[in-house]
Image 1 (cartoon, rainbow, N blue to C red):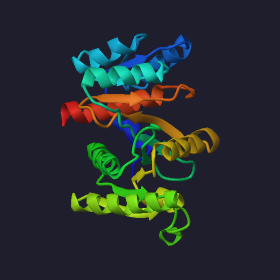
Image 2 (tube, one colour):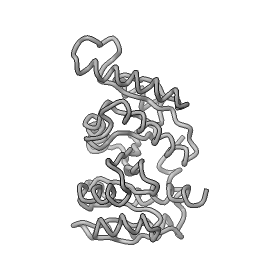
Image 3 (cartoon, rainbow, N blue to C red):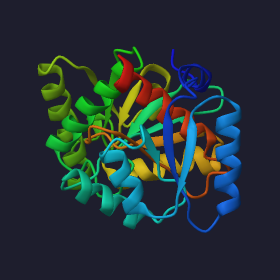
Length: 255
């Protein structure tokens, strides 16, 4: 089972270079840098420019990147341009109190709104989890139980989309199942959870992390060939996000 501790063990690579974005809170960035280096996660290089962070990642000057508290729109815009993708697709590592860690997607409000994107998120999330030696169980959510069909057009749309996305994901060989609206069962049984859309995914993330005390290590960008960890500026420290970046970069570079 994946845990924060198992990721920290994988992140014991002080020879790796991880870039950390610095916005207004330079003290938090420095503290995270010192903590990550003391714990042997990586050598941390601070960046106050989103473009330089993305370009150094693209050019191999650093092994992985963490957004830190750089402006999200600016940072993700630079990632799109540098890596030539039309949309950034992310999934967040969540560890609820008393529960198991899972990967939640989509967490960007404009992501995961159609069947094709749900399947793509499932495919890319499975690829990411395999880097951590996990063949994931994937739960694809909808806005209601199957028996709720007919109560509202919008609910029907999410039910139909989840069923179709599950069917297509299974045809690709993914271990996917339709978990309907039952997030409590998905969180108990699944390694990857695909929310009905980006807004609900973002709300799940915020509810778990900011209200429920779940650990949120960071949200890797799934659809680029480098490790870039998106983060919330509300995090108290980015040290665990540096660890996640190092753990994933380690698998890319050395395996």
